[in-house]
Amino acid sequence: MAYHKRILPALFLLAVMLTACAPSTPPAPTPDVNAAMTEAVATVYADATQTAQAVLPTETPTSAPTVARTPPALPSGFSTDLLNPLDTPHTYIQDACQALKAKWDPNNAAPGTVVMVIMIHGISKGAPAKPQDMNKADFKVLMDDLKDQGFTAITTQQLFDFLDHNAKIPQRSVMLLQDDRHTAQNFDDIFRPYWEKWGWPVVNAWINANDDTGRIYLPENVALSDEGWVDYQSHGVLHLPIDPGSSEEFIHNELYGSMQAMQTNFKKTPIAYIWAGGGFTSKAVQVARQAGYKLAFTINPRGPLMFNWVPLIDQTDPMRPSYIAEGPVNDPLLTLPRYWDTDARAHLDTVRNIGDAAAAYAGQNKATELEYYDIVCAPSYGAIP
Image 1 (cartoon, one colour):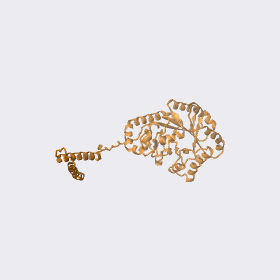
Image 2 (cartoon, helix red, strand yellow):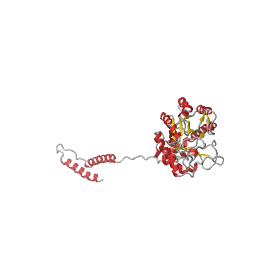
Image 3 (cartoon, rainbow, N blue to C red):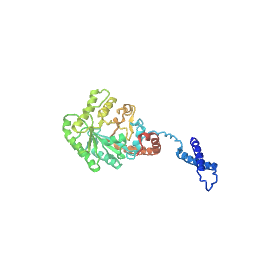
Image 4 (spheres, one colour):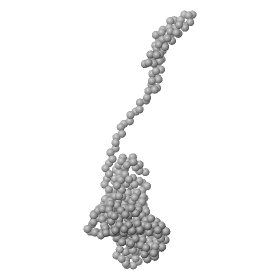
């Protein structure tokens, strides 16, 4: 408005001056001052309106308010009546987002991937010399059945990677874990044929005592380790069971001492400890974790292993009192179960059926779990590939 107040007097003065300066001959008609001012004012107002419209901010369209998405409730974990009633699945990854991302990453193992860990003591050509030993012919039947039913042998590192972050392994896997010290000839006769035919490795739980047997068997076993198909892990030094009465010094020597011996003799750091005689305690598990072991195995035949799924027991089973309850230790990866070789064949169908049932259950809940992940987890953990 101040702009208009200044311009109007100037326009009036201009009109007067134009009138005064007009030529006298021929006489011109008297200019219509009102009309001139009206036209001038109209021009000024038109220019001012265009200028104002040019500088006024453009209105930003308002978007519809974002509606918060409510995450669905996660389904309960997979369970099955194919296990002993007191043996129940235990998880070891408590972060649901971490577990779901590893579970549904298409680059990882598919849900329902299952591992059967088989404990092997001795395999004889004739009648077994010990109750826990197995005849070579029966062992061949077991191996053929495993192959026929789609199993593939894996190493300790493969097992750890699978249990830790669901790394891809064969959907039906088996880990052949032979306890104690054996000659190189034992591995050549019993296990090498399966390595050469199928590429199946074997794991040896090696006793690290520096005695006569160790000094005799060690060089040839180091040579086998260097070949790469016999995977050596720690089985203690004195090979005596750890129990509640074991001293801290004894526990420390068995766990740290065997690791140091393997580092010296085999030039490798073991990632697994096989509890001698199946004996362990909460204290021993803590020391094993501190020493750097990532896995440890009992002699308890609870069932197969799946990602974030380990069958254990929370209290002593009166029907199987010799098998120590693992639940109170609260570290499933250091109290893993194993099937006994002498009755492993009887459990092949159970292992396969558990894996198939777990895959089907995961498929039923996939949409719900992915929706939950997208709402709750993706902002912090990123999208699943």
